Image (cartoon, rainbow, N blue to C red; front, side):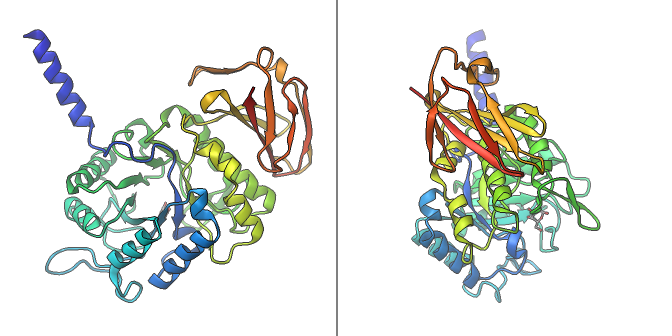
Amino acid sequence: MKKLIISILIIITINSFAQKFPGLALTPPMGWNSWNTFQTNISEDLVKGIVDSLVSSGMKDAGYTYIVLDDGWMSMQRDSITGNLIPDPKKFPHGVKALADYIHSKGLKFGLYNCAGTKTCAGYPGTRGYEYQDARFYASQDIDYLKFDWCYSDSLNAVEAYTTMSKALKTAGRPIVFSLCEWGSNHAWTWAANVGELWRTTGDIYACYEGQKDMGTWKANCLMHIVDMNEPLRKYAGPGHWDDPDMLEVGNGLSDGENRTHFSLWCMMAAPLIAGNDIRKMSAETRSILTNKDVIAIDQDPLGVQGFRYSTKDSLATWFKPLNGGDWAVCFVNRSSQPQQINFNWKNENVNDTLSSLQLNAATTTYKIADVWTKKTSSTTAKPFNAAVQPHDVIMLRLIKQ
Ligand code: GLA
């Protein structure tokens, strides 16, 4: 009898947490989102152009899958009779289902945006009070991804608001990746592993390297500011539930070195890789950064362990990320405005990751060294690694277990 009661309690507990669709986003989601470049100036023609470029540029082959329309895809009012959301008929004359069909026909997936509050950040109808109705609408439009923001949320309880939407999506029956966007204000990483697949850890990103950018009533975050906030949260991330340090600004005005730094660190942190540039017009350099398969493989590694900053000396930080099969990723990050010299003697270092219980011990194991940016394979960890890192740039390596 006692055993039976315990079993029933276990089943009830598991079911009350099992509100997510299983197996979504086992590696960090990859895709494109309209916000960073276009804000609310979006349209069917624009999105189709982006989709076609995503395919022709090799980004689809590199793994970018989700095409997400951010704020501004709706009409200002819900349907006065049904209460349904209405896609803006001027921007999307054929509705969003037709766009979903187009995107699916290219072998890609489609996402939309809304907000837990009464309005979206740009003032369009929010979901508060319409959670189940909106979830049914997304399922009926064949949506695969929902980004759910936190504007006009007033005194809402974040756990309740996001859990309700998560349950609504599950009830609507279509597997939809649920991207929480409460900017870290309610520490979603401590409660959202069973609510969604990814959660923002910070306020909005801006294409700048260090510090914050004053936007008048709020402050946007430069890359390294975000990195400092996201790095300590590594223990909360893993397959199916990722820390999200916001979408990519690669190709949006940073220098090539800064673009490489941005992309490398997002990959070291197992971050979702959601491009935010105009990929119809990107430069060859931006394209080569965004489609570097060796760097992406570090982000998408099936072990799903978020990397960590191992040491910092004179503004030169050394990062490590354990990979499946005993390999390691290493990234040397020069945060200063002077070139910095790396003199790294692998054998003298004790890289012991208590989170994954994995250890890099170069004294007993020799690893082959592959530079994932220059593609050079230089020697092994038997010898110290010496190289110069340019200002605001990185050197990123894969240590391959022999
Ligand atoms: C918030 C989010 C952004 C973007 C805008 C849209 O600021 O954090 O990523 O979705 O809203 O209005």
